[in-house]
Image 1: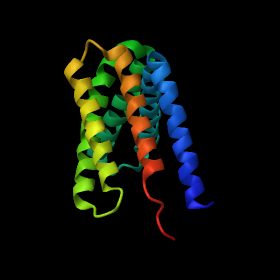
Image 2: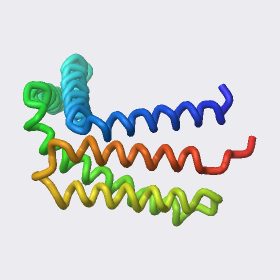
Image 3: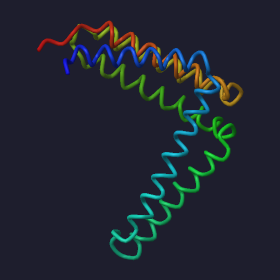
Length: 167
C-alpha cells in the first residue's frame, strides 16, 4: 500500500476516534477502562499458562504471583469499570504528560520541516495530561474520554499537516 494512502487512512481513523471520544466521553472512558481490564486479565492468564517454562522455584513463584496479580486486577477493572476510571484518569494524565515530554524531546532533536507540528503536539499533549492530573479525581468520569479525544485530534492534525516524506 502506498505510504501516503496509509497516512490518510490513519488520519481519518484518528479523526473518527477523536470525534467519538469527544462526543461520548463517558462511553469512551468506560471503553478504555474495560479494554485495559480485559488486556490485563489476558496477560495474567498468559503468565499462568507459561508457568511451566519458568526456571527454578523462585522463577515459578514470581511468574505465578505476576500472573495472579494481572488476572485479579483485570477482573477487578472489568467488574468495577466506573470506580476504576478514577485510577485510569490519573494513569492517563501521567501517560499524556510523558508522551508530551517525549514529543518535545523529539522536536528538539529533529531538524525536519514538521518540527513545529511535533512541538505543538507535544505541548498540547503535555498540557492535557497536566489538566487531567490537576483536576483528578473530581473530573474522572468524563475527562479521560474528552481529553483523550482532543489528543487524538491533534495527533491526526499533525499527521495530515506534516510534509509528505520523499520516496
